[in-house]
Amino acid sequence: MSGRFRLYLLIILLFGFICPSMGMSARIKDIASIKGIRPNQLFGYGLIVGLNGSGDKAGTGFTIQGLVNMLERMGVHVSAADVKVSNVAAVMVSANLPPFARIGKKIDITLSSIGDAKSLSGGTLLLTPLQGVDGKVYALAQGAVAIGGYTAGGADGGGVTKNHPTVGRISGGATIEKEVPLSIMNKKELTIMLDNPDFNTVTRVADAINTRLGESLAIPIDSGTLKLTIPERLQNKVVNLIAQVGDLEVTPDNIAKVIVNEKTGTVVIGQNVRIQEVAVAHGNLSIQIKETKDVSQPLAFAPSGEGAAPVQMEDGTIVAPGGSTVVSSDSDVTVAEEGSRLILIQPGRTLGELVKALNAIGVTPRDLMTILQTLKAAGALQGELEII
Image 1 (cartoon, rainbow, N blue to C red):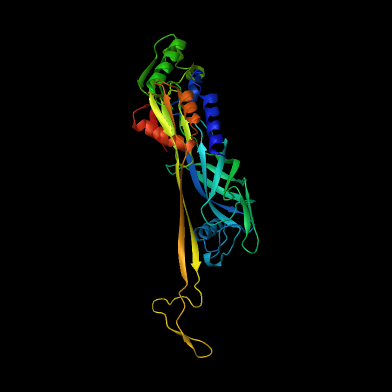
Image 2 (cartoon, helix red, strand yellow; image 1 turned 180 degrees about the horizontal axis):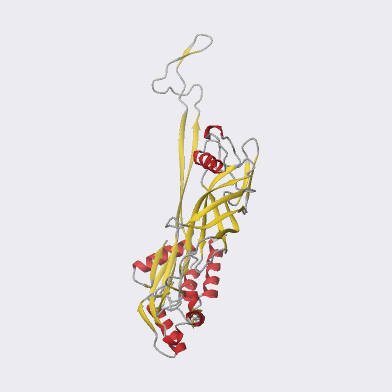
């Protein structure tokens, strides 16, 4: 994809999704969350069996030890030295325990190889307990593994791999066995936290809630938090209150920010970015150096070179030595500079006008990154510049 096409695509995306004239509203539940209502992470160590020779190698100690321990629990006594299998893989199993999840609910799990297995395709995860950071078991996982790829190889070492065959998933592969205590009933207040803290946004959220409830119950605490006092008449209807609050729509206010990813050449410009009056010149200087080798082969009776010995011919005649073979370098230096164009950008220009003006002088996304950094250094860019 050419740099010019990428820049056109960037302009289309920016105008299509964050056009300044289109202040898009969002539901409160899409831009905020309630303190305490969150998922919890679970993890566990397990074994996948039934692999077609694509499991961990025989020398993988923790896989062998895990298999031996499992067999011991089942009454099968075997020495670790006698275990030489390639259809078993050790994996870490991870899952998210959603809030208010009850015993018996199924959750998805992810399995990641921790050994040198080539693929988890076709394997089955044996019963694996999943624990939280407190060491308590909250779920049990087991089932057939599904991966979104494959690997295949020949005897000569060549092969083909699609996607990532050493990471798999089991949909509904874990069953919750223990609940996380969480209750919202009989609460006197709720804490609402914004995903992207902003003083204007938190004020708008509080105003929307107070307007809906008919009294000043929501009070902003800081740029990302507000306290919602639950009136006595709604003490036993907290779920309904949360549903009503979550469906309210507000228009989030975003700070003027430009995000630059130098690794991928991606530039994202927020809708509130403005620039002061500034002149931008763009031009590229390219220097190309081409070096060629020339070989100079002297004639037989060329003048003698320094340190050369006389040469005796077949008839016994002594003649002076010939010249020496010389290798020389010929450098061709070409300097080319593209014509620069100077463009004056008026103060207070918006996102679209900025990109349009820069596109007029033929900049690529990577050129745009350099120009934006220079504008920020000159104090002409009114917004935050973040480089990731």
